[in-house]
Length: 363
Image 1 (cartoon, rainbow, N blue to C red):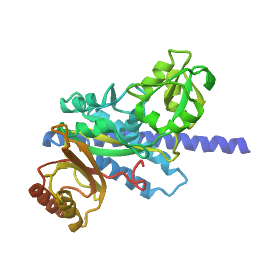
Image 2 (spheres, rainbow, N blue to C red):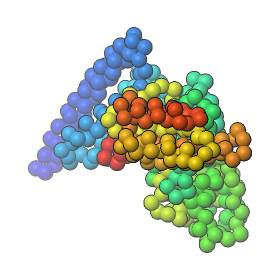
Image 3 (tube, rainbow, N blue to C red):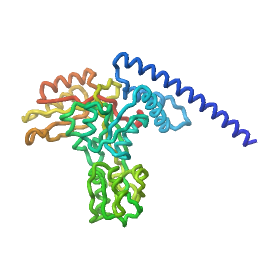
Image 4 (tube, rainbow, N blue to C red):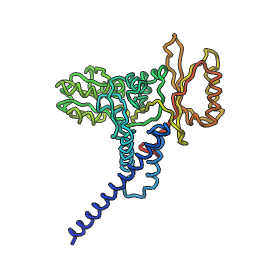
């Protein structure tokens, strides 16, 4: 009796699966029609804010028992697949395959895009600038080690815009071919990953040299070719390059996140939950920086980050990077930027884009 009931339920599931397939194809047909209309009107085919809106709305209607986390992943892939029918997106990322930047790109765009590995951050900016990639994904800052200076410096000379952001929890593992820590005589890793594990390394691997490489995936790739070498990299990199985990979770701070930025050449429309990034320089006089920052306070705009970097134009000359809540199309932001234009020596808005929020899509 029980086995017959199971067969009945499975037949019902098969029928539901066919209905889901029919609806997915119906959705794809609608997406294709929207793509045709966008081309006729010269509109961008991909709108990150629209994707977030769709997934957030679906999540808000979920009454269970289907898990919300899985629902987000499924609809991200549905949207990614439908978009690929309109145009296959090319997304440049800090490669090779298996880096944290690669994972951030998958989390943001889904897997139905063409991911293009680039060995250096500068190359990602160039690929987007030259139209070799529609978008790029770059690491920007870590919750324990701070900003990635190479990425920040490139914004001062590049016309690319920030079109999105994603925060990725990062856990580092010590990998090697044998899976035994005692076999390791040299460790490869990216400088940021090494810095995030420096206490563990000094305590457990004293005297073992650490060699800097362009990415954690490159570190894993090299360790896979040397019996006495190890790598600090991700679990995904271990699987990809045939390594074993000698030690899990060697990062010094367990709540370890990296913020990645999505680069593009198009403006992103407001969503109501936005962030804006800009860079500017000020004259060397008393109160110059305070005068500019007060513009945002007067408009009730919350600054979420400020960072200074050498301008590289002359000694002791600095650029200031600022993140704040709001979009350049908001009146209060326009007023603040009008004041900034009058008081700053140089300035440029790097982009307004949907703010990452754990209550929203995919966070």
